[in-house]
Length: 146
Ligand SMILES: [Zn+2]
Image (cartoon, rainbow, N blue to C red; front, side, top):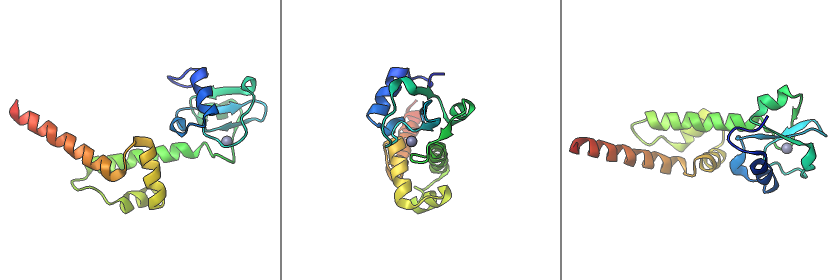
């Protein structure tokens, strides 16, 4: 199985560069050791011929692989869920939600949650809230003109 929307060469390049931006988009299965990893895993790189790429942890487990104890690839989806839930909270809130509250909802420390959110969205939670409000204001304005 090939990771969704990525070909094997792109996956392998991400693994070689330990590119964290690819965490959660696929996992790297290492047939010789029977484990699967995040693309950014800090473990020594396996030989290319022993590697298969999977769209997600579930697919890798189906193939009989175990999650790596070093990079904890299963936690990627937990991270993703936490950020997606925070985005929902931000969208549903009138005011910019407090970072501490968002982090507490996710069960993470404030600093960890801020890093996680920023890594996945490219914006801090506060900047994301402001951008969303600006976008809505612009939409409301253009709606009035029409
Ligand atoms: Zn790993």
